[in-house]
Image 1 (cartoon, one colour):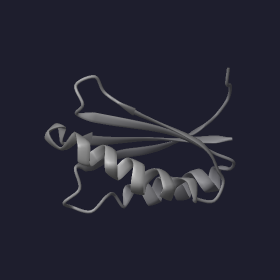
Image 2: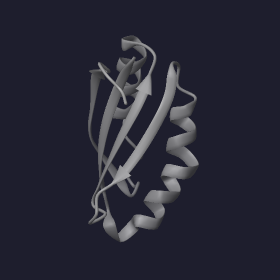
Image 3: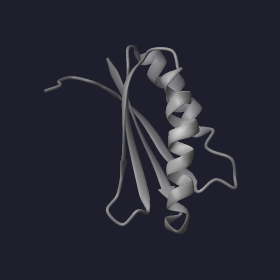
Length: 93
């Protein structure tokens, strides 16, 4: 199994829009990606950054998902892409 750890910057003045984008576009889109296993989306206490931890079944699926994430949201979106890194999952609890 592999993980993609994604990071975004959030326009804290548009937090409601960012949450709506997550719920109505991001999550449904990610769930449809080949190899998707599970996802967790996190927001910093100050509301200015987000991190996602997405589990997929293969290295190829992880690389494809990271590439898709790097395309980023539309320019006018309340979030901006920062990074997407691929990791091998070596343990879970």
